[in-house]
Image 1 (cartoon, helix red, strand yellow):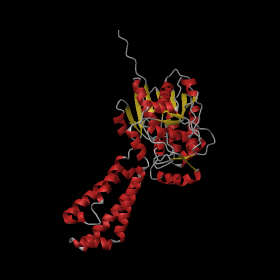
Image 2 (spheres, rainbow, N blue to C red):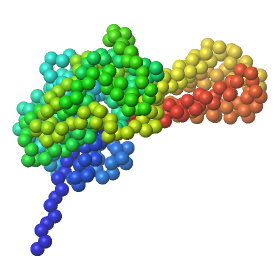
Image 3 (cartoon, one colour):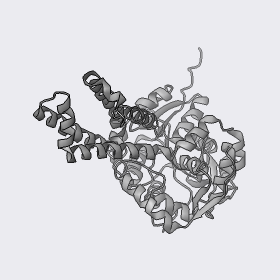
Image 4 (cartoon, one colour):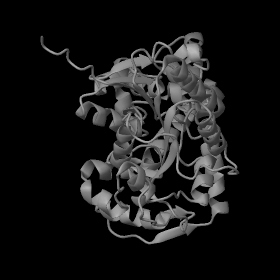
Length: 439
């Protein structure tokens, strides 16, 4: 009789469409393993990674072991790449990093899933003041107390061919006009390639590997933050620029603004947690990965050499700080338009009187339009509503222009250009809308 085909090992990857998770999925697929991806928003992920089975769920609400039973069905190993930097409307560190994570691991004990790979972060040690560090430490300690074959991986500053989070900020700073602005320029930042991290994760899932170990995944390279930005500017192909070392106290107003807009859903890598982590440095044992997993992470120069930059990298880097500026400009433009319309309701009404609108109808139309403009300006400031608001900012001026043209075509020749000025506003809204994707 023919032997029964051997069942492929099934790996559950939590946070499977994030920066590290995406590369882990690709490595698992290359090894012909059965993959289950887990995340909050899986519609796009299912199109990007059609070879994985996707399960939608939110770790913030899955805080009991029973909630994880479906996701663990038939699973041989679990990889947890999920995490967040700082508390915000969609991220609660204590719940996601600790309660949801430990519920998953306790469910692994019940389901008999022995192998767990927990992706933490280099530099997670007791005593650091951030909620990020504290909750990461609690998750590690909780996992260590369970009867599982766990491996904790602690990557350094993860660099990838694609831009994401902190690595996206690096590109924006490296491409800054005329100078390279740097805070904590002398902090040591040990980088690691996302490909090396993914390979470490894959090896850690292998059931014969040693277990119950914490492993730093960093290169032996120890550049300063300023060194990394200078080399990245050269990688982008941009002309050399001097490093502008910014004292931390001068940067904190911008950090506080980043924290404030974080409350609106914008997960900026310039928030206070990132600055505190950077100040402390991002370091680890550069030999650990080779000793335990047989991987020697590449140094930063080798990483950049393996990923030749192209025009898309320069576009992204140059647009990095222009994107929030474009959104802020549009928000203020619509807020100001609405406020001025309400403040000068009589003058705006007289403009419509000229073309024959009844005064009451004209006043009502101006008031409604002004309130709508204010609502759009406010909506553009909220991350969850911003894309929809930007699209409306592109559509409504076109409708207004068409109506105005039908009623008074001569407005196109008005010396103040009330209709002509709609064109750049529409184009800017379209461009900002196209830049909204973050991953």
